[in-house]
Length: 188
Image (cartoon, rainbow, N blue to C red; front, side, top):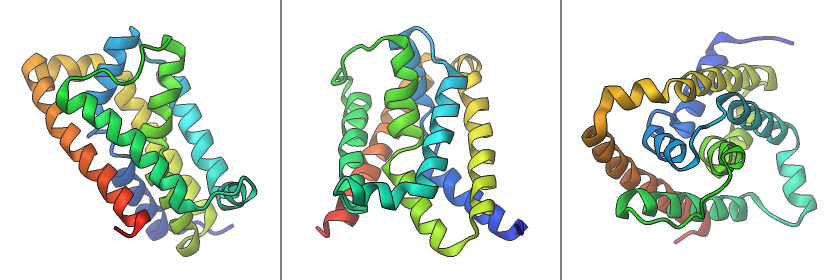
């Protein structure tokens, strides 16, 4: 087992950009508002578990159930699209869910450990050693946990108007990510 600092930094930065927890702050705050609270530990552990599991068995698992990576990514793009539409237009598409389930769906999956993250993990596995990717996952999950734990402080920092602006802006960014994910995997 050989750890490589360069590979760890690369995987950490790539996953950081894909997970984009900073960009998801308005979504997290909105989910917390709807649910009453978010279980940061549960969301972080479930997201970490999903990413680690997918790193090891992702491609095989998709093949067993008759799916390819592209189909998985397209499905994830639809979920991201609808979350973004809620943010931009102020609609409620997802039904109000019990607080314990909001921490898992849509927060842990697909927001943190979504199709983009999963397909990125499969790509990283072709270039980097597994143990270095694991360290990158762990570092990102620690940061995700920190952000989830501090949503109250972040909400106070941005204020109501700031959050509204962030929600709309990041909603548009999420829309763009959903469309890019869709286009990249459909060839349109």
